[in-house]
Image (cartoon, rainbow, N blue to C red; front, side, top):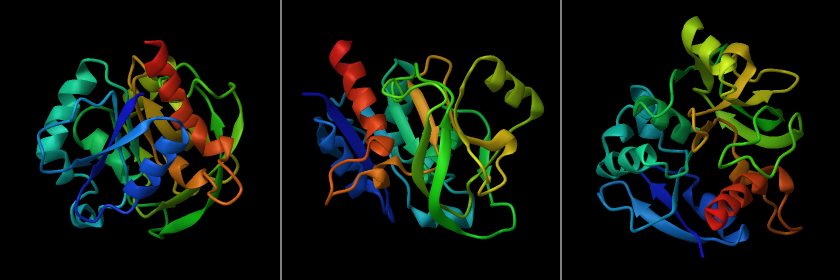
Length: 224
């Protein structure tokens, strides 16, 4: 059985839901503590959102220095599938695993609602279960979700097909080029601002919208 680590930082809100989504996908959820420099032999890592103390500087600016993140950077460099959700996306950017930065939402308001996304890339470790151009409904909740990068970086992301998700319809936070998620060049690292772990429904069964992210990486690990 694939072992997928879920990191908990002080103030993390979404680790429990991320672990639940991992289990629904048929993998073992392994708890990782931010102060431990040990990934416990996991096959993939999820950096969930919700550690609000980082928002006093930039979300993720402190978390990127956690001992566990040093190991995540090393493992991701060797090809370990790594997913950053919301604040976790910000941590991956702060740690240099993904380019660009997440800044205060346009209008400076916290946004919390269901949001349609368009799937742009389906050959990453986290999106193989989706069809190109698919429209999926994922909850979004953030105050610093506005993705920004230099024009040259944005052009590079577009040219290399590394925009994984775009906001469809209204852009909730003013992200440049409607970007909701991006990947590393090899597709093993993905950062996503909306919350796929919240798009699984415990009473009626899992929603393919969110669970596809977790099923995809299980497929990737099983077939590796």
